[in-house]
Amino acid sequence: MRFSRLLIPTTKETPNDATLASHIYLIRGGFIQSVGGSGLYNFLPLGKKVLDKVRAVVKDELDKAGCQEVSLSFVTPASLWQESGRFEKYGKELLRFKDRKNNDFILGPTHEEMMVNLVRQSVKSYKQLPLNLYQINLKFRDEIRPRFGLMRGREFLMKDGYSFHASQEDMQREFALMEETYKKIFTRLGLEFRVVEADSGAIGGSGSKEFMVLADSGEDTIVVCDSCEYGANIEAAVRKEKACEAEGPEAVFAKFHTPETETIEELSKFFHVDPYYLVKTVAKKALFDEGETKVVLFALRGSDDLQEVKACNAVNANDLVDISEEELAQLGLVAGYMGPTVVPEGVSVVLDNNLKEANSMICGANEKDYHLIGNSFIGVEADYHDLVAVQEGDLCSCCGESMRYTKGIEAGHIFQLGTQYSEPLGANFLDENGKAQPMVMGTYGIGVSRLLAAIIEQNHDDKGCIWTKESTPFNLQIIISNIKDDEQVALGEKLYEALKSKGLDVLLDDRKERFGPKIKDYELLGVPHAVIIGKKLQDGFVEFVTRVGLVKEEVSADTILDVVTQKVL
Image (cartoon, rainbow, N blue to C red; front, side):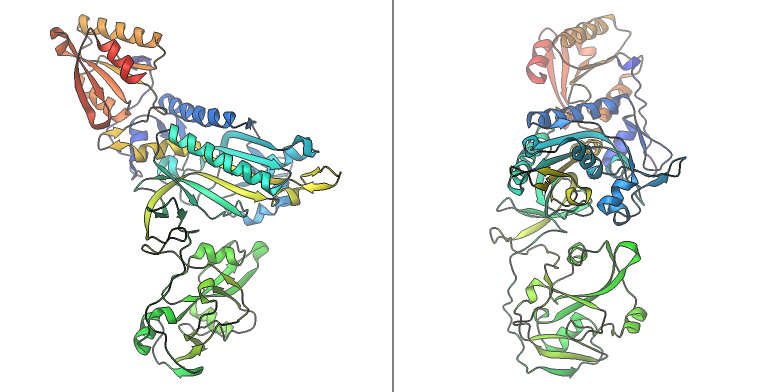
């Protein structure tokens, strides 16, 4: 392609709302164009070229794994979401609308219901299973704060795949295959990534893994162990159970006067006791479908912090919100002195797993200025869950070594759904005995348009983009320094045609522009390699440039074709 004929509206100005490198450089490089600052983007020729290349890698590996591509309607009947029970649960990110006949529809943020509807009409027997169908299609989520360009837009290109099985074991086999397939995709795209345990969120299911592209600008905090392969989103991370070297307090169960001790720190100082032996009680209002609410007390050791996503999942709520001291008082709860053992009627209690069999504990008496000492949870029947937010330095549950935080960009997510969608939507098959059974499902997503941003977040410098080999819009850029120099133009044209004949995708900068702006555009666009044909040609030399580090190598004009063939092909 000739630069002079290609729409590449590069600019020096940084967009006002752009903070991430990918957002800045994709706009400045003319890859994408913002539509009214509302989280919507047009893909210009260069951006579409990269998008198609990334899409091709995804499709190629999926097809090799035996998946079949379909294309589902972007507009989804709301009735399908009502059948699955997600119409209310999904929240305000789900864009709902009515057509002229007053029928309810949504713009699909994900397509579990639509794919199940397709399969339940087509698959009737175990002989037709397993089946793995996918699409690479537009999605829409009405983000409350769209930001960071392609990283968190409202409309995006997503690969979503769904597998259907006759058994849980076969679904888990496919889940493992998709994990390996995704690893191949991210590796081919030249990304440094980590597979981590994750929360299933609004998709649901019993187990899920995220594919995190490691980048300091990532929105997600992930917990990793450098001594083994363990990694998890902080919302799903687990640790080796903590012990405490400090001795526990010895006390007979009693109510104890504890004036002005409303925090764990104050209580620890008052009793001269490690926070490990104190019970931290956090009150939240849990929100459910159809406006139902419930106040829940979550109790854990005072040395730990509550992980709200884990807490939300523990009570199967849609969300948890804070509750005011006034609301607590109306329920008969005393802020700063709450505990899990003295609870008014109508208030639920969930205990952290680390409180099982705990002894010598101090907790609130639900009375101002009083705590209960000598509490024992030995043999106590209760609703126990993992509620703890894993901290840096906590020990890995797999190998026992110390773990740390890092940042990541969620670029892929795979789920073991089981029968969560097939049962309510009636996606059944006849087994070998002629008995109807619900299909067992898995679902597998990749944010294809988000991958463009992730690649640049991980591969850029202060001058612009640096595309990886499989994602780059062009394999090589030829820069003719002086378009008025016939010798430079002749060599540029000759090299351009020769490389195209070898199958290379080449960008020839043939613009009547000064050399300075041309090299600035090369640095901004991030093509992995360039050949600069300039003044040194009169001595028989050109420059071969590698974008990573902007390393320049002087090469004989007579051998440049061989050098490019060797280093780029």
